[in-house]
Every structure is written in C-alpha cells, then in structure tokens.
Image 1 (tube, one colour):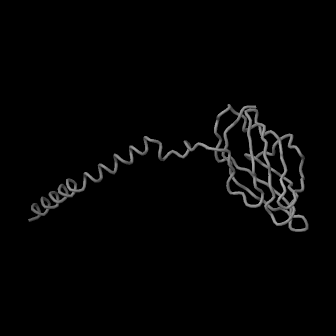
Image 2: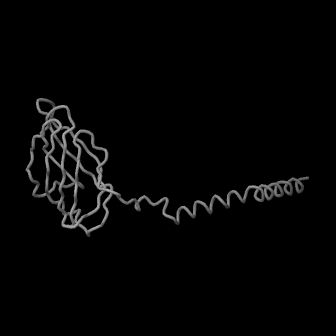
Image 3: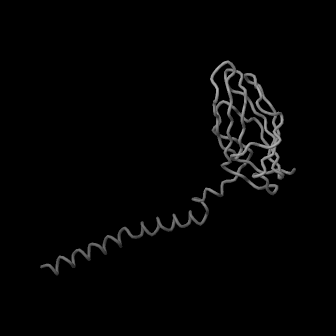
Length: 160
C-alpha cells in the first residue's frame, strides 16, 4: 500500500509539471529577455534634458554643466517671503568661486544667476550624470533660520 501511494504522488508531480511547466518556462524566458534588454538596469537611465527634482522652495529654472566642472544655474525663490540663501552644495561640495557670493537675498519670486565650479563633476562632453544631490540652506527674512531644501539632478555635460 505504501508503495502504491508513492507512485501516485510521483505521477501527480509529473502531471503537474507537464501541465504547468510550460507557463513557468515561458515566464522564465520573458524575465531573461527583459534582463538582457536592460529593463532592470537603472544605471542605463539617460537624461533627455537637464533637470532638478524634489526641490520645494528653492527652484532651479535653468542649469548648465560644462566639461571643466563649471556650473551655471538660475535659482528662483518660491517661498512666500524673501530668503537669504546661505549655502549651496552640489554632490556634497560647495561650488568654488561661486558668484555672486553667499549669503545672497532673493526676493519673493526673484531669480539669481549663479556661476561656480564643482570639480568632482568635470567630465567629457556628452556624459550623463544622474542622481547628483543638490542642497540649499536658507533663512527666511524676518522668520526662522536654517531651512534646508534638497533634491537630485540629472544633466548632460556640455562644451566648455
């Protein structure tokens, strides 16, 4: 009786594999095909334009990185009060030679054009840089101090 029970279990296992094995095989082939096509490789993300994401108060309306590491950016105040921008960090570093210098007051809705150099971001023309952190520290005029606004950038290095 025990021998007969083992044979029935073996037969039902084989029937299950024959019936549903094709679905499993097709699923494996689809996943392997997607893997080979780079579908699961996040590092292949390429910027279609220069963009900054996740900033709330301090907005970057224009940004340009050159092969030398020079950066040109237009910063806009979206706060409901004037702000005194006291610190900028890109990729963990304050840009050298930042002009105009900080601290810099920006009126409500006002914009300031900054230039500086971030040597760690120098590269070949056409290179894409993704997930580069950017951070602004500012004080509200007539209000609280030490506000922080952070985001990430994606850009292509341009001639320069």
